[in-house]
Image (cartoon, rainbow, N blue to C red; front, side, top):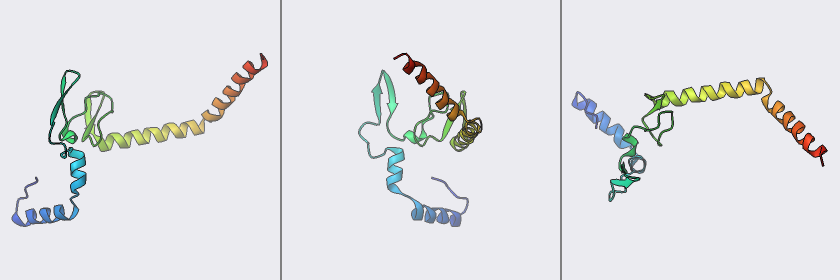
Length: 122
């Protein structure tokens, strides 16, 4: 919980929290409905089942669990927001390049030539 410097700020924070807090979303991201097995053994390793949102991803290249607070890129942690924005811009650029170079038309033409070679042999 965030502690404000003044009592007035603290009351404002608590009012905002009461107005905008979604309990079911909190239960989903923290997996708090499953209190029985907080830790399980999987493939000889202990796996945390409660509060998965607070775990750091283990994969070294962008792949992370849902609601991960940060992601790794080549082993360096970055905020999830910036990694996602970068990936979207990169995909936009690559798709624009594919449209500009007419890669789909070239691929379809190559497939047509390839199938024509095999159909002539029959």
